[in-house]
Image 1 (cartoon, rainbow, N blue to C red):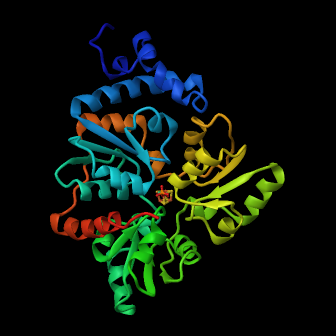
Image 2 (spheres, protein in one colour):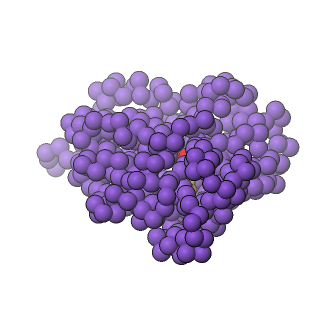
Image 3 (cartoon, helix red, strand yellow):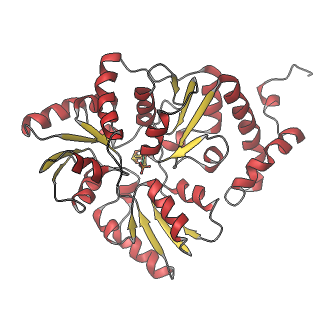
Amino acid sequence: MPDAAGPTDALAFTPDIARATAPIYDRMKRVVPAIEWPFHAPLIHAINKLKRDRNAVILAHNYQTPEIFHGVADIVGDSLALAAKATQTDADVIVVAGVHFMAETAKLLNPAKTVLIPSRNAGCSLADSITAADVRLLREAHPGVPVIAYVNTSAEVKAEVDICCTSGNAVEVVESLGVDRVLFLPDEYLAKYVATQTTVEIIAWKGHCEVHERFTGAEITDFRNRFDRLTVIAHPECPPDVLAAADFVGSTARMIDFVGTEKPPRVLMVTECSMSDNVAAASPDTEFVRPCNLCPHMKTVTLASILDSLQTLEPRVEIAPDLAARARRSVERMLAVKPK
Ligand code: 13P
Ligand code: SF4
């Protein structure tokens, strides 16, 4: 039955869209099979057009899929880079292709802008592992000890602490306080890693990332036995036996920089699995060995949900002004700490 063009027609893979998106596909052709491109290209084309119409910018975490990371993102990076760059945009609308705590951080730093999180289900096991009431109890149990919160926490938790940190600046933040002892929450394994890098005593909460806690030291040994000349680089959210077996430990941005500068012939990135795809797309001389642990929260953000979010300007991140003011202070204190 003849009909006006509906949403499905608008998202057809026409010759015009194929031509317009060909340079974008070129950036990810090493990791996105050609058979998938007709599904992604119309969405990418529509998102990039709507972004211009809305004066919107898309911030994407390194764990987003290659079609988001290389196809529609304006700014990509680790949690620290996304927070820092969120302060520098003059866009009216910020879409966070990441998880909820990242979108909250962007909103804290841009209270007057519209901040969108395309999936209401994009949570985080670390952020869920601690509440504001837990922080108040910790303070009672350890009077006078400063509290550092990983950015993987809710705005309510950020409002209760002294300063935030990310995996990219945790050691610098701990040492910036000039004290002998700190409370560090909620990631136990990141806390343990930081304790190996400083003389400051670290009192840790026992939260874990559900993606990184699944890696084991035995698994790393097994990979080393199976692959010659393997360089192992790991995220500090991994358990201590994994970090002990790694050649390099760092935030997602530092892992990417390591591959870019060291150019290892064969690398195992012990972290969320989309990141290997994103880096592999631009690293033709390195072979990526992948233990594939996906973050189910990150994966609830898709091209379709980003397009829907830009069309409807929902779901928006809203934070009550009093709470936002207290949480913002912790994030801004972190951003003022000089990197090493
Ligand atoms: P970074 O990108 O800051 O290293 O964080 C990793 C992570 O798990 C974010 O959810
Ligand atoms: Fe949270 Fe881990 Fe997923 Fe990052 S990878 S969002 S820390 S559950």
